[in-house]
Image 1 (tube, rainbow, N blue to C red):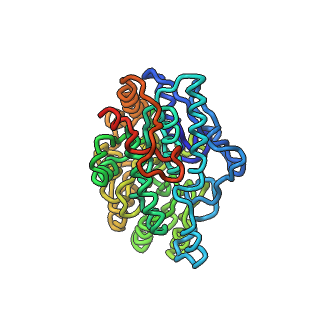
Image 2: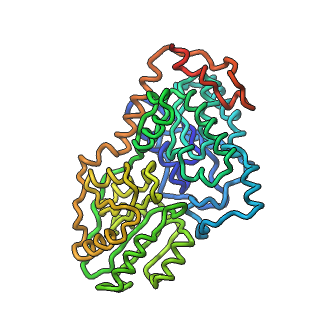
Image 3: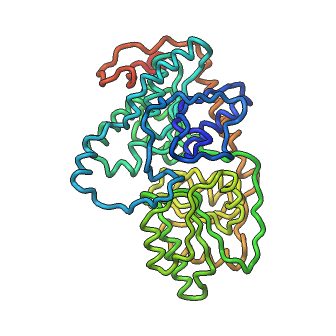
Length: 447
């Protein structure tokens, strides 16, 4: 398993591989996670650890590699995310000079060597690479090509269909779209975390649609009951995560401002953001006279964060504006915490899951009036929203989602061992060890 992040890092992307690895032994598989060294300049989460028995090797990125800093998705940073602004000319030129997929793509041959070494001194059955960063997909493809093993590419977020691509230079978008297509063609399976994403990619690559599957994120541990709340307390709204891109607390802030012009006061509400927040939300809270309502903390250890969610009147699940190809990973922590969820997202998987399971209410991202109604209801009837039952949430447990991955592994490894993927490429890119050819995929060989 190739994953840029792993516990005890705070990065939410590390949870997915670690949860799969923890439960794969229940289905006869043992996972080895190749990941990065622990960060030197950021804190780690002492409450998040890889399960006992999982082999964890921090050999994915060499120790001398520069550590990433200043990412909008870094929950340990107290620096607000800068409001979107038109880039100045030096920034525009720097964007055009950027390396497709990112500099970590250059380390993919290193992952190939590690995989060959591991195969020579042990037993490997398959390669699983999870992104983002998307360079991890290149690492997985290089390792699969070097060993001839089945390749599973796992995209926690869409790549070419991601809204974050829109601000990049056109040549970079086109280059990465071409790389994405080659990688998908070389993979035996491509996993997405949302059914809407799977469908969108199936429409984009109809010839590869049979390889695309959906395995959602998951919650780990037993389902908890929300902590009791007194009627007279202020309404506690908790958002567990970062606000950047189209994700914003603006709709909630405007709804509270409207209520404060009527039956409520600012001190009746408290919004707590556990993670990085955007400058524009802080500015808006001050403009609306709600600065005293908004509390911002860097990410808490997972166990402490879940406890804060249990004490919330409403857990805020905020999507990326009108973008529908995402299920925020925090939804599954919200499932476990048990308090009602107020979901603000475009129609899509997150919207549907919240409504179908009874987790709470799902509204359009700009529905200020609907949010105001939900806040009044929550204030007058603490936790009046129907709570989801265990049977409704069971498909989203870590063990259930791992069962899907285990079945896929069993299917892909049922056939006889295959030769190494060493055939020449039809149109070689710069590094044939990094970009496998669709002609060398297992499906092409099988046919």
